[in-house]
Length: 242
Image (cartoon, rainbow, N blue to C red; front, top):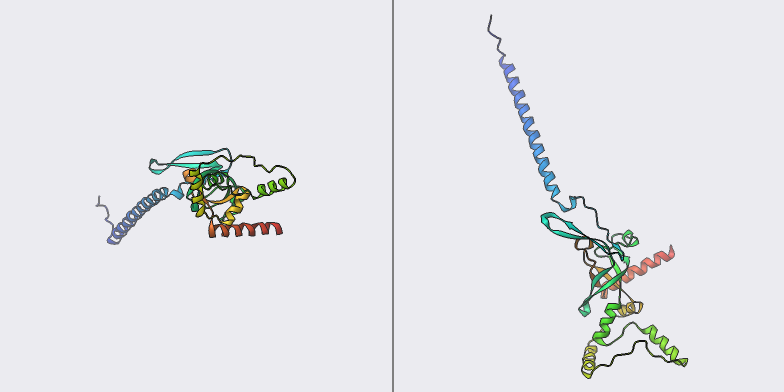
């Protein structure tokens, strides 16, 4: 029997070329899958790619805060429902815990106002009572009582006694001198004094309720207060025309 026929040079070259192409394709596929896996791992480490739902913290008396375990074994506090927070009165350097009464403005979305959602930078109305009590204790001045004083004068004119419901406590000479000294440098914005009369103060939330579980913030004052008052007035005007 004769020897098996050897392939020609051109056939050998074609076989080698096919093997090279096949090996290169396998390497490219392996490389592609490697980079795809690497990208997927990198994306998983991004906080915004974790697929967690937003907290959408609602204004409700049924306070609900959830503990969330996050990357690195750390802990976040997801507030789902809140109605209180610590609010700072900057010009007086005082902070008090108070109730959040209403969400009145949000620069990003009016839907968050309609649904009473507490987010950072939302403008809310808070109860003025804790700050009013502090002001009375610190300065000895009961702000926001114009209406009550006018009613008392009217009763006195009619012949009725215009006695206040709460009797003033007797103060020592030292306390009176201290209050008089504090009153010398006392200044109160007219807009804030007007708000004290209504019992509600405009404030801004500076914390992130969905991350730290709190709705803390500060009382609006000065130019910032004027800006948001104009915004709210404009919003009321649009609502009236509609």
